[in-house]
Image (cartoon, rainbow, N blue to C red; front, side, top):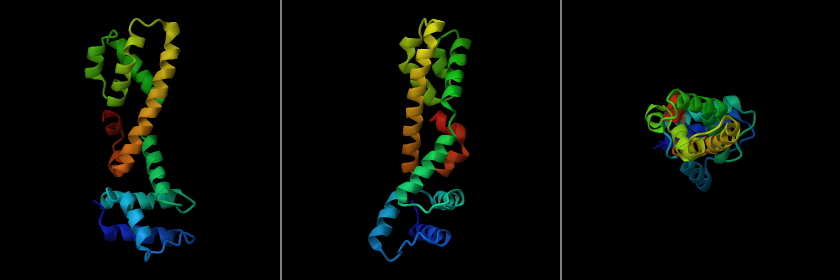
Length: 172
């Protein structure tokens, strides 16, 4: 849970960094709204998020959602791209002779494993000419899954921990 003093320091940091930000720290409602958004973050995660936001963004945040969207974007950069995820999955499946039970136990990434489970009937006995269609479905599902996962992790305040541990994102 974010300490209110640390939160206030972060807001003051934004005010100092962006001369046009003009966050009135005496506006109790505005403080509450912003604090509620970040209250699940740890002190370190919030501080790191605010500083990296400032260093990487020319413009001040328009709302707490701007900062959260930045955090989500940074998280998504740490995931394997969808084409690499497909290559990983199909290579592992082929290497295991399309033994799906072994695939689920050997696959290091829960997101990929879950998607392959849902595409199992499409992959069983697949012919090479059908592979591009299954890949397209996989890529769509994977992109949606990482977007959803990054959104959840951002809202839960699991930002810095997850950014520093990219493999943890896919392992679940």
